[in-house]
Image 1 (cartoon, rainbow, N blue to C red):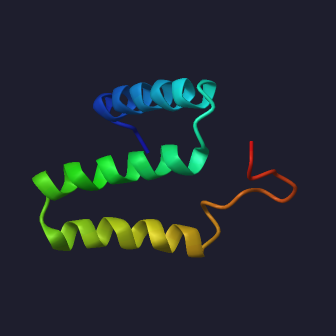
Image 2 (tube, rainbow, N blue to C red):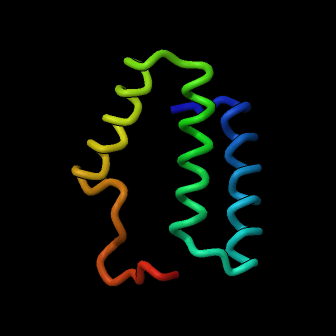
Length: 78
């Protein structure tokens, strides 16, 4: 699947922000919570509720399917 250039650019900026926050020893849960909250805020201002629910359900389904879990032997505190 081809990733749109805009998505790659947004992802690169977010990756840099995450890297910066990790270097500042921010707790990973706080980083993730802030990113999720910001993402939901953007979606709430630009997307209808059924679309948001579908996106969130896709994420939930990915967690249930094991697509977003740590590989065996990985440390969750890295």
